[in-house]
Length: 87
Image 1 (tube, one colour):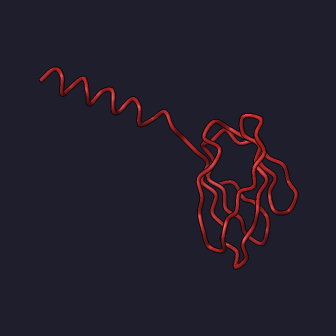
Image 2 (cartoon, rainbow, N blue to C red):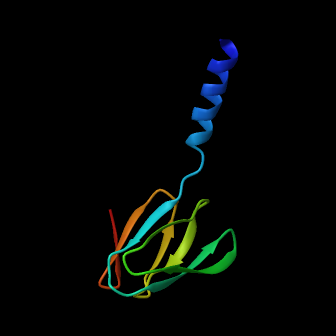
């Protein structure tokens, strides 16, 4: 019984460790965002109407309209008319 309880506590603790920002593209066109995470630059493609998770360890991101944002990995972002809105 103690082993089952301990396994449940460990699993619950691990579930809260990994977080990422949620980015949803509400526009009818796809966008590419530039993301820098842990010093590594990459391109993040988001299709029309699609959602992605990104920035597990925090990152800097350049939005479609050129705005630069620092993300901690807990944000919910919507892209509407090429502009990011934080929810």
